[in-house]
Length: 183
Image 1 (cartoon, rainbow, N blue to C red):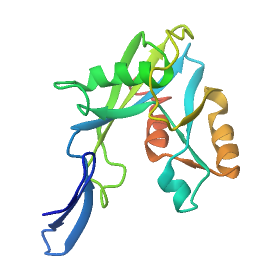
Image 2: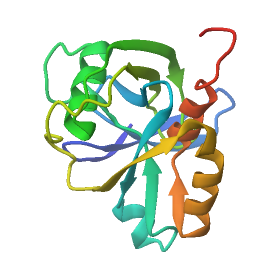
Image 3: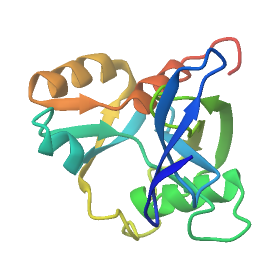
Image 4: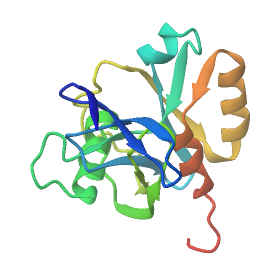
C-alpha cells in the first residue's frame, strides 16, 4: 500500500508472510542502482567525499565516503546497467573505463528499509585520463580522492575517525577489489 508519494521516493507498507507490518522506501523512477569502483592503473581507487543531508541532519556524520554511483533508468528511458555505469563514471568522476567487470547484480544495502538492490562493478582504467571535468554530481560531491589500493584500510579508518560515514555499497565493492577467484 502506498503511504506517501514523491517524484523520486515512495513510502510503502506491506505484510510479511507471518502477517507483520513492514514500512519501506521505494524508488518509483529507477530499476536498479549501480556502484562503480574505479581502479586506475591497477594501483589506485578513486573515492568521493560527499555531503549527504540525511546524515548531517541527524548528526551522524560530517560527510560520507562513497564511490561513483547512480540510478538506472531514472533519466534515460531504456537505460541498461552497463549504460548507467559508463554515464555515472563520466558524470561523477570524469573517467572513461577501458574495461568494466560486473561483480554482482543483487546487493541489498538495507533490505529491511528499502526495496532497491545494487549492481557493483569494477571499472578498469589503464591511464589516469580525465576525459573531462565531471559533468554532474548532484551537488553532493565535495572532493575526489585517489587512494593507493594498498592503503585503503588505513585511509578509510582515518576518514571514519575524522567524522566520515562509510557507505555500505563502498565497503561491499571493496570486497571484490582483490577477488582472486574471479580476477
